[in-house]
Length: 122
Image (tube, rainbow, N blue to C red; front, top):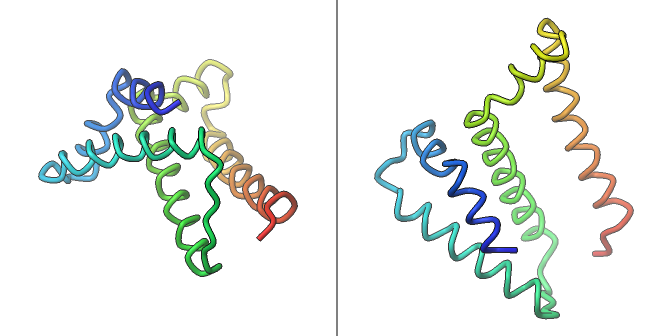
C-alpha cells in the first residue's frame, strides 16, 4: 500500500506541484522524507496489530493533521489533473461548479463525521 501510494504521488507529480503552489521549495527534502516515512509507518501499521492509547485531545489534533493532508492532497491532485473544469464542461454544468465543489466538500465532512460518530469507539 505504501509503495503504491508513493508511486501514485510520483507519477502524477503531486509533490512538486504542491511545493510550487505553497512556495516552499526550500523544504523539498522535508516533503520527500515525510512522504517516505509516512508510507513506511503506514505499511508497518497495516501489517501489525499495534494499539495506541492516547488522550482525546491528541486524537483531535491527529484528526486535524489527517484532514489537512487529505485536503492538500485533493487540492494538488485537482490542480494537476484539472478534473473539475473538464468534468463540468463535459456534463454541461459549468455554471454549477461551485455547487459541485460544495457537494464534494460537505459530503467528505459529513461522511467523516458519520464514520467517527457511529463506527469509532474511543
